[in-house]
Amino acid sequence: MTSPRTNPRKRKIPSLCLHKATGQAVVRIDGKDVYCGIYGSSEAQQKYDRVIAEWLLTNRPTPTASTTTQNPANDFSVNELVLAYWTRHITTYYVKKGKPTSEQDNIRQALRFLRRLYGTTPAAQFGPLALKAVRQSMVEAGRCRNLINKDVGRIRGLFKWATENELMPVTVYQALATVAASPGGGIPA
Image (cartoon, rainbow, N blue to C red; front, side):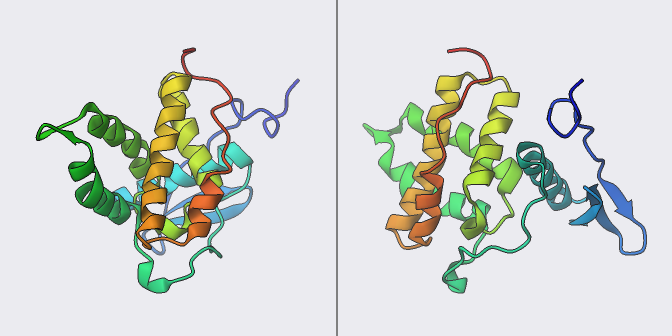
């Protein structure tokens, strides 16, 4: 018989609960409380989704501190980075004969998965485990492997653009480049 620790599909997902004394949303993972923000807020739900996704992937909670931030002046969220990428690059680069190309919509679809799990996370703290968690959420949504791999490449493209425009330390993009293609799952291509 497979134990819950070795088979992530059999593990019981911890619930998001209210910590009455503080009004915070909290989830208990492996005997440790992880506070997610104000109970009932979308930020708390997003952090809970992110923590659970990474826990399922690695069997450990999300680290609370990052060593990748080199310039605190550039410490903005993934949502803010996506907005800058969209307005400064996507809407001007992916245009043909004055009209948006289909790649704009493809990028929008890929970035939805990223924003749902990591929108409020500082962009400099987004690393390989986070990218793998986003990839896993795509698998769970039933996307095919080829599309997942293209979407992961589109997310990497966001961080490559941020690096070349000096919005992000190069180490963030380099770390994301180490994530391999989707090992399978989803709908076969």
